[in-house]
Amino acid sequence: MTEGVRLPWRAAARADPVPVLAAARKITDDLIDGLAGTHVRRAAHGLRRLFGVAGLGLTDLSGSLLWSGRPGPDATVAHVLDEVLHSEEPASVDGVEAVPLHVHDELAGALLVVGARGSEVVRQAADVVVQALERGRLEASADQAAQAELRALRAEMSPHFVYNALTVIASLVRSEPDRARDLMLDFADYTRYSLARHGEYTVVAEEFRAVETYLALQRAVLGERLKVQVRVAPEVLAVAVPYLVLEPLVENAIRHGIEPRTTTGLVQVHGQAEGNDCVISVEDDGVGMDPKLAADILAGRASDGSRGGLGLANVDRRLRNVYGAWYGLTVETEVGAGTRVVVRVPRFQPGVLP
Picture 1 (tube, rainbow, N blue to C red):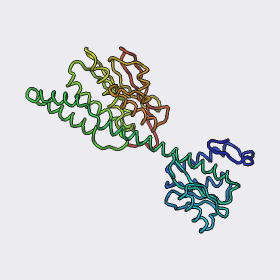
Picture 2: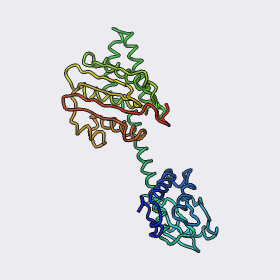
Picture 3: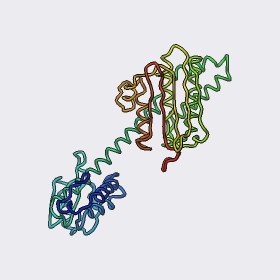
Picture 4: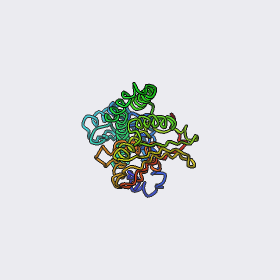
């Protein structure tokens, strides 16, 4: 039995499972955008060859069929298709068999087959299509959720931080007007980068610039309680990364690592090349946390938003979606021992451009 495909026993006895599995995966990829996608006809070709039928058609709810091979008589096809889409039950007329395609209990379209060796073949072909469509919807939902979280990150500006930053700037207007002006420009840059619409990707240099602006404002607010060190190697400045992956990590380091301390704390942000990878670390010597909590945060299981669960989980998910499971965030922490968050991405990735 292949992945999601049950062939008739005679065909299964003869078929090489490796090309059969590869064909099923190719069909799944072609249907990832649904029955109105650009590769539906190619999926129909693959299904017809995989199941050895004379003709095979796919349609969404519009009733517009895309055929591969020999289509059935127009009148017969129109009749059986109308019956299936209205009754949502299988139908067969003069050698043309049709089945409805239900995705997550909703009618998504229909599959028509000419010259099938029994209704079992039609059902198996429909199973392949439905599994592909379900996968496509799940991936689309996951992407929409990640984008919604990114929009939430862009809009999530701590009122406490904003109030403190503006209060400090106001207090300096008379005594240190030049510094007040510089901090106001930093605040404007920070809000622009956090709230403005951007493309999906930026470069490491822009992310570090946003981090330095944020740190300048936090140093004005926290004074001697905050020490910072920022160091980035020139060879990674042009590396393309998803937008807003560093600032949430630095913000978490200060809010949940340094601010709870009563003494001076240090935040270090370093970026360097390691072979073909770009590795960026955000480290604080603050209060730290339970490693299990850190694991729950990355897995999206932490319900306490005050611990930065939304930001860290979103950054990790977006990195892994773009680059694969090998990349993303790692967190090293212990209670009372500070926290180190490491970002690892490839220095060059096809399709990732700022």
